[in-house]
Length: 148
Length: 208
Image (cartoon, rainbow over all chains, first blue to last red; front, side):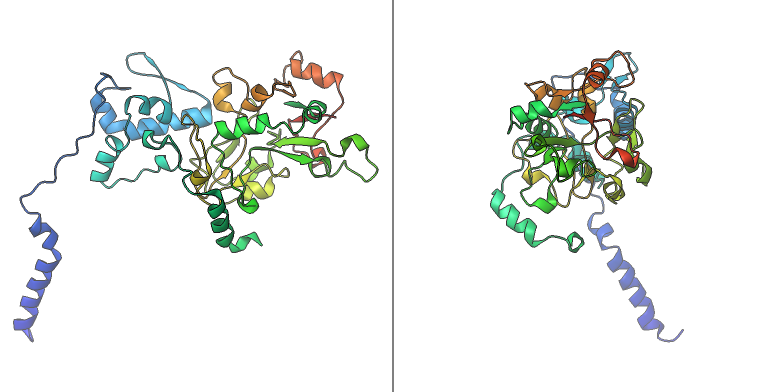
């Protein structure tokens, strides 16, 4: 091999550089996420293990049943009827999105788009912070070309 | 749904139904007309019934305002064109929106002959002054419209507009039931529907 003296150390240096994040975090575990469980409620819709593993599938089923099939009551494995609603039922007990949902979602870098529309408890007071006049000016200045 | 426009004219400029609906469903009040979002609104006769209006029309019709909303058509063109089935017709006849599926293509807006659909050109949240925490908002890039208050019907309540009208101008009922109150009203009064010749079968009737 030509220039083996340069190529081989070069490859070693490259591999070391690419794996820097691995070496700097070596032996250190990121803290396990600790979502805040509501104290005053003992039971969720289903068991803790089920909710931990299947909550996204359950919510997807709920959304389908409510919006498309007009079914609004979920009967859980204990036979208890539950109103299928993220905003009005789940968040009734889980009173903080930041301390519950976000803790794990941030940890695993999951970005569900529930909150683009559903109102988390933290934002119930509203968003109309800017003056209407400035918003109008802003809106008219950035109108898309397809308006014409 | 039957709207008695004589009552609306008598109590003009009452807008209780519009306020109730828009507050309950977190409809943003966007002052810039081209970004406007509306579920129920008012317009004049010539705009609501362009195929019926003519220059020699009865004077009573001038100045009378007509409440306009989604007609929940029998053959909804918006449903036919929706590529994701985000808008669909329920078994009970309500034309419903599944906001989770809407991709914002706006085919439905082109298809709807009544202008009942609004597109969210921008994030609506800064324009919602006093949000209803029990109902979601929408996000930028989706189309929205009147859902005939499906969430209230499920609880056995009337649509918000009908409940808010203290003069009883809005009557809601089952057209399929020949003995229903609404069928009785339709038999006893002369009513108009918007753009019937298009064959969409609108389900909102106007007593003139």
